[in-house]
Length: 260
Ligand SMILES: [Zn+2]
Image (cartoon, rainbow, N blue to C red; front, side, top):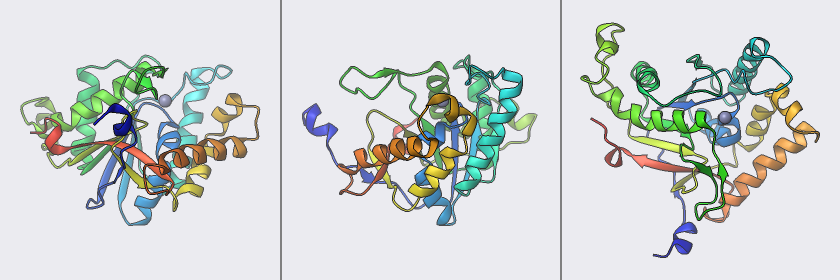
């Protein structure tokens, strides 16, 4: 198969035989730009989704100093999650902008996986670029790369009792090897998609909750900006999903990641 036809291959429907998901990203708004429409539909169906953010996004707004910005963005993230049926939002308190891939990050994410015991892990593009699978993409941020990679790795760490033994001995967290898929939103090479239709309106409202951030990002009317951006994204994926607006994911099933 040539790269050209591979790019246009149909996206498979996301797995639906699961009840709990944990979404792990670097910043407030990462999930709202990426996949909140899918999350709204999943929580409608009675599934439980928990958000885990590595930072509070306190370095994200030039005109607001981190001490004021962190609490503001945390509040916006909680409001934004509530719109799509997510009531649990946790923060790991890494410093925004300087998150490093490493053992601490893997351990903290593995601990959250053991606490929440998800079958589906969701994260955001961990690769060097956005778009441009054939070259010419946009450079990704250090935080996204670190958190995405650590999440993929932590899926295995969570299930192995001999990696991070302190999680059991100090925190009483038993290994959890029940992760069946890791789904990467914003991937340059998606394999699956979720129907964006039912959750699209709420995904617009959800992203709009990041008021302070969007205000400095664009002079456009916030709702118009958000609606144009999100609608454009899901329409772009529709060509590979039977014409239905779609939220694409690159899915790593358990047999393709080193789970123990
Ligand atoms: Zn981000």
